[in-house]
Image 1 (cartoon, helix red, strand yellow):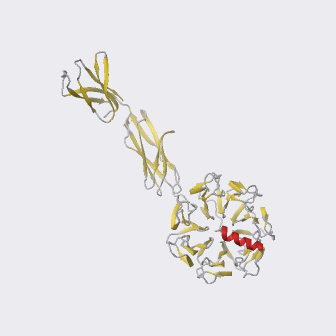
Image 2: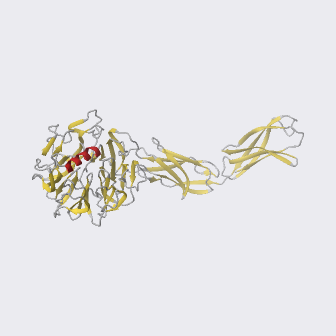
Image 3: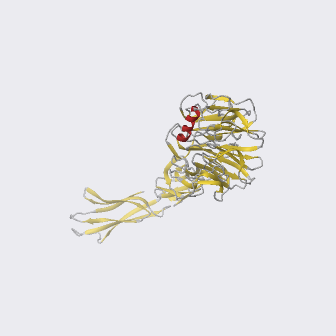
Length: 561
């Protein structure tokens, strides 16, 4: 074993790599996900791009605004068709076919001619149009829209496939064929499918990942693997899984943790072996040492390393040596990362499970989960917001409470109440609640168009209610009078009396809203006894008045609506 390869082995086990996962391409209207080393990415069905998890190298793409993103975070406003997460870097293809990259670039794996070691926001790679991309640890593969294959990044083991061991900082073409349809990148090796269904491999072959029965350790150009027709292939750190066109599942490479699913027949498998007898596999995704697959009935299956719960089976077993069904839900896609997994169910909801020390599950915590936890709605099912009023019509000055009700999937966030374009107030919608409310007395006489705008959260898209017409009536005619309890028109010196004011309303008013002041006057002087803010009452008792001087008193009240 030469020194270059020995150095590579040390890097492999100290740094640990996660390969690229499902290589299926998605249309612009399909939701997609991709789990990286310690971060996660996805494109929703509306074409928006979202990332979350570890951001130490800029792999989130938000210009490094935070070290961890604990919830999915939208990146820009462009429309994307697919996204792929490498170990510390991310690649995306926009709807116009342009390729963009961000994150760690220490070996030129972003393909931008090594402009910087870290790139914190998406940057365009060249001007070509692309159909598919896959990113390993330190190298990248991509297919242009003309079917040609290109590669760049670290090439110490021939994983670029250009016939050399030279690291490339910009894309170089691999061969001259224009029939490539998909690629997958492992730690130090690469795989690709051509339009005729043939499977090809190149790069480091020490664990048998090339599938050629270990005829050579290094393969510097694409080498065909058998003569079968394949529909998909996925690369883990040092294992490979593929589905043939007849729906059967096959695996080869490193198998110490059961990641091939062959019941642990051997630690190393040097050529493809069939896994079970089922011919109903529709997709498969290889993580570092674990694998997930989906059958045509939508059932999800997992096998391999399970120490962090990355299989989602809530098991205490560290290794699962054969495919094991995970729950009873139906799934449309799955992506296996380093020690975590992402999946989309057929109802469009996105779920995550496994290791979460870097917030890569996206559920707002750092807690590892041994079962799937819901993260968001990747194919939005819709959120509805309605608004109601506690008093409509209301009287000028009367307090009115507006209640907003949000119907969604355990919605959280904020609700902004507006009177036409003017913001009245913002209320918080807490976890477990479906309503939030505000109370206001500031509405003027007339009609008002009141709306409630929900901010949205990772599980629920933003939404605004239909407008509620709130009518505010004039205060009408109101008169106020004062009575003295315990006395008449003559008060006894040094006695105490209770004053009470009574308001009579007419017109559109059934109860007063405002404030009243009760007072008594000495000749040429006066003193306010008490002021009360009232709402809906017609009588207001006040503090005791003491006639402590022999005087004539003028007692009265003033009401202010």
